[in-house]
Image (cartoon, rainbow, N blue to C red; front, side, top):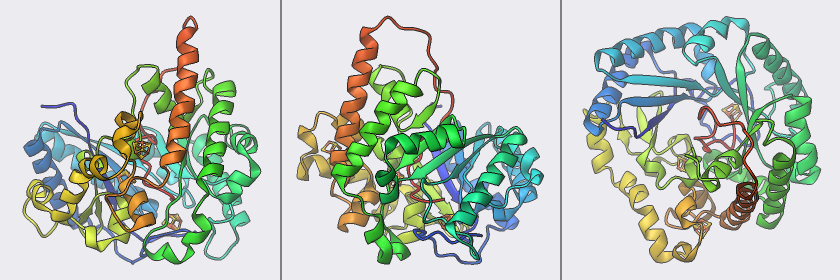
Length: 396
Ligand code: SF4
Ligand code: SF4
Ligand code: SF4
């Protein structure tokens, strides 16, 4: 058995109850049927056995995952737990939701199946997340209300913020204060945006200038180190970088994994398998296969030409790009395939945020060096990977 992690981003529906400008989902009215859960579970457990995984992390996303209802998750979680127990393995579940339909009816399943945690998203400022029949302001108001309700129910919440030009324009200080003081959060993460799929026509609005983005992130990193780091505020992915550069075990986000294809797959409600939710919703040319139609997930992953392109990408990058000369190669590995593909149309290009990452890595390295020179006070240790493992969302 191995302590490697196998992670599945499961999309039980691509339907959604809101209308974000930058959404790349095909919002089909299709849901993962209860009748298909046993087959899905069987295929995952067979693959875990074949590949030697004890545990599988399931990241439930959408569309909007909460449209499935709390009872659906309670029943599905119970079935999967029973089947895993019989196979001597286990599933750990995480939920990523836009939170708009949260009510206390969810409390029990979140405190049980999801260990009392959920992940959601809010940008600052918020011009792009909108209700069907309302404005971005109405979305922000409703989301903030739902956030308060979930916290009153004792749920720990992590928030993903997708950066956009408005974030850069308000500046890192106002951005940081919004999440930590206005919302009172102690766990949030910043994701870089990227165009993809049906949202391609609006991509121009979401492309950020690398120099501005790097300056913003370096400012934000410095503010967090000054005001949040010693207080235990988790700000991803900076917290993982500090772990790395201070010599602790680091749970780096997928964009900086040695190869995201070693750890992640995504499965949608029809059984389509691809690298992550961005691929399964946007790029049919890179589908690996179908979990409900093919007899073995392991065989699919071993033989899929589309997956081979992901497996071979880091090797191609060191041959064709300048990553081999980069002092951060061992932490970055050329960055995220979907960010490269959506910007250049090629999987074997390095991540277009390369220069931004270099600035952030260098900032983390400098902060870590300063801390390592000081006598070490007791400080907070990161606990769980609930948000930090994934940088798939430029949305949700
Ligand atoms: S920072 Fe840039 S050059 Fe360095 S490994 Fe990452 S993508 Fe390659
Ligand atoms: S977001 Fe990028 S790095 Fe993460 S799993 Fe998807 S393709 Fe891989
Ligand atoms: S980005 Fe997510 S929350 Fe927004 S409309 Fe698309 S699926 Fe729904």
